[in-house]
Amino acid sequence: MDKTFRFFSEAHCVKLLGIKSRNPIQLLEGIKKVPSSSIYYHTHRFLQQHYRVSPEPPNDFAYWITNILGLRELGESITSVDIINIDSLEDLRKEYVTRLENHILSGEYISDCIEGHEFHFFDCKTFVYPTPFIAKDVDELREDLEKVHINSLCFHIFEPKLRYQRRENDFSAWLRNIGEEKLADQISRLDPYAFTLEGLRQKIIRILGRDD
Image (cartoon, rainbow, N blue to C red; front, side, top):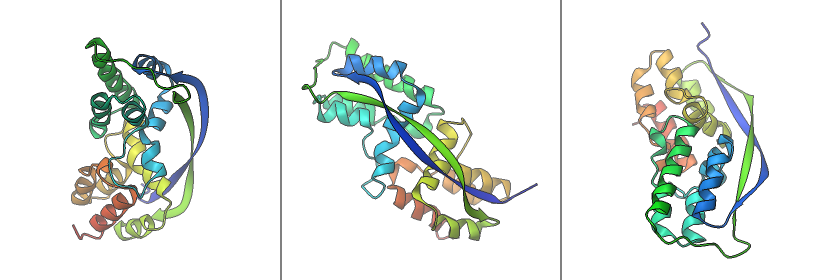
């Protein structure tokens, strides 16, 4: 059995879906019908594009609700979705839907945004490709992780559970497969949304160096 770890990375092709919202009701309708790849994009876009910015950045939905509509409590509710314990994009969609529905059914203030500040839904087609980096042991995994593009880290950390419904991230799965249970558990326990992406990279590197 091949026990090497092959690093993959990803590139994104973003397109406008032609669906826009002026208020929470229309946002709810949009979230219900857009493809799951759109949900992923709007949840992770800020995190991936601003990977050196402070951790726990707002997702696009929460940012628009808070800063454009001025509905701070609803925005905080959307921000606080515990994505790390959600197993699929459809489950994530349901969580957003539930929180928006609760807000609407409560009779809370529903406001339209100013014209020109509507929420525009985007879709994102993801292309996955192999990189030249292949690790045969923990030391090589650590060395390669220092060199790969940040998109490779995103692919191996965020994609496995949400897109592919795997039990854990690719690093932990591989480490467990080669008998490194302790390292696998340490990485699996990390909340990737509590770090900047560069901070997450460095944290995993320290774990692999057995410094934590």
